[in-house]
Structure formats: structure tokens, C-alpha cells
Amino acid sequence: MNLTNKIELRNKIIDTLNNQKCRIEADERDENFNYGIDICISAVEEIFKNCEVEEKLQQEYDELYEAHEALSYDWAKLKKENKELRGDYDDLRKNYNELVVKSNNLYSELYEDGYIEDD
Image (cartoon, rainbow, N blue to C red; front, side, top):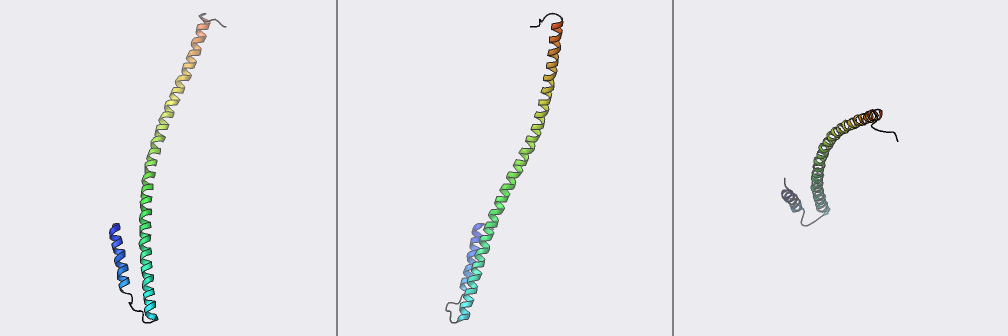
């Protein structure tokens, strides 16, 4: 039910209740009857206000849920990317360490062969 239909229904209920009121309050019973109808009208208005609040809350919840889903997906992608980058970093670090060892060995060989003199 859309908002326009809800407003029409609310107004129809309230109009129907108002039409049931005693036009001339001849005695206390008529006054009490009209008071009871006023209480019913207040209850109907409160019910429709609560429905509007519930709809707004549901809409906000749905939006937050969608945002949460998107963030969860992004988080999973970032975790996967981080894992891949960590693997790449570990490979680069290993290669660097191997190059340092090779460089040191080469330096030692060149020193031993007399191509490099000690400072």
C-alpha cells in the first residue's frame, strides 16, 4: 500500500468515526460516547504514525544491510589482494637476499683473485 492510499484510508477511518459522534450532547452518556470516539481517533492516528516510522526504519535497515554487504565484499577482495601482495613481497625479499649473498660471494672472489684491493 503506497503512502497516498494509507493517507486516504486513515482519513476515511477518522471521518467514519467523526460521523458516529453525537451532534448534540444531551447528557453525560453522549459526552462519554464522543470522548470514546476521540480516543479511537487518537489511536488510529498513532497506529498510522507508527506504521510510517516502521517503514522508514525498514528502509534504513535495508540501506544499511546493502552497504554492509558491499563493505564485506570489498573487505574480502582487500584481504585476498593483501595476501597476494604479501606473497609477492616475500618473493622479492627472498630474491633480494639471494642477490646480496651472490654479490658478497662475487666480491669475495674478485678480492681473492686480486681484482679488488682492500681499502
